[in-house]
Length: 633
Image (cartoon, rainbow, N blue to C red; front, side, top):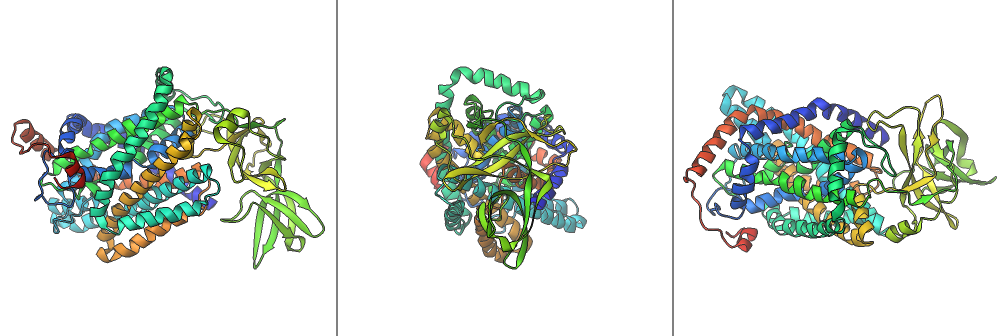
């Protein structure tokens, strides 16, 4: 798995090169000016559209504007808003939030434009079940531009669908399932992560089997409820710390252009690193320019392609500028991002070379890295720092199965005994240490990390019972520097990854609030995202292999939820690498399509706005809002 993650991170260095991010942001700025600030139109005309003022039952499509927006929002307002924002702040610092806002503002133009294009070229051969998305823009648009380009258009559409499926598997599926299992297990250690995976699989399967009509119906009810619940809880935290809000806003702007200093659990970060994290997480959260949301919007009932694009512009506003900002302020105001240690050793532990043993396990030979707890003339008790999936950290090996035992010269671990008790305040908030809690300490190397601007690194470990005490199975880290690394201090930090950090922030205000609120919200957000992204991937499969591929795809999609919660992904860095790859490949495929058809889209947009401003657009009174939600307007 480590080699795979390293390969993915190498690919991400290309996918997220600074120039690529500049192009994406620049494209958003381009369409902002080209549409004469369509953000304003989204916040005014777009609201009227989703209220049903322009809905007509006989228009081609499967669901109304509100349900289409809800389906798309259920995919965007997901764990990226809870876990993704936490990742950005934990690794990139407060400055990352500023760049998230920039993506949110200019992302409104990106989202509106890509949806307009998909609506203009959607496939409505079956008016009650239309198909749309960038793949159809490429296929139909290039053929319309020049019949000789038909094959090229089909090929480009196929390439986009491949990237769509990659993103479906990573961000739409694995990120959601892993985060829910992680936070559920962190608050309820007796609940196995795989159990969460089973429940999510069953719920998702029952909904997606009904197709877009059931998806639209479920998300139309789910999205307003889950957003409202999260909004109320976040506002409670904000009012509890209202006096600190101006200072937090100053911190965000300052860290966006200046290095963020290391403090507590935060290791520091350069301004460039903040930019990178803010861009990556905002692009993942809002999906602006990614080409996914147009697939949901293409199912909307309308004969005006531009109208649905204006509605889509609301998504980044709700997702990034509202929900993500609330999460940001909760994490910053409570100090969860740069929190102090939960416990402190009496003295700073030494870093020692990990013990490497080669053992015969059945018919296979394995190399283990960790600590020898006890050794006799019959057996060896070994605390393995990097066990296989489902394998215990502490395992007794017959001495006859041990082929060799030596000290590794390149892998290091802290030399510790029983883990110290948490301080009183930390124990009040999160309870005492428990088996399988993930923790970390901070180590120093000679080489300065180019991203953080510091020479600090996290050393992760898992709390494991050894006899009647709790010890730490440290994950060995590699260092081949001439001078050996050393520990930065005796502090021990609880590792709150992704959504768990947001939950901890709520708990710091009212212990137990994060446990229930964030767990419930995570389940709601994740399930809604899993449902909508399953439809996105389904449309990609239909384009590539036809309708017969849908059922096998749905089975595989649900199986991936289980796989994601089986323990293959262990840290936030691994999680980010996988999800970032999915977003990155889609951006590379979709942005060129948007630029190629930009001029034609802007002509249609100008014509629509002219008819709207001159009163030529037919409308009617606002229908009953319940009917809008139910799709009966």
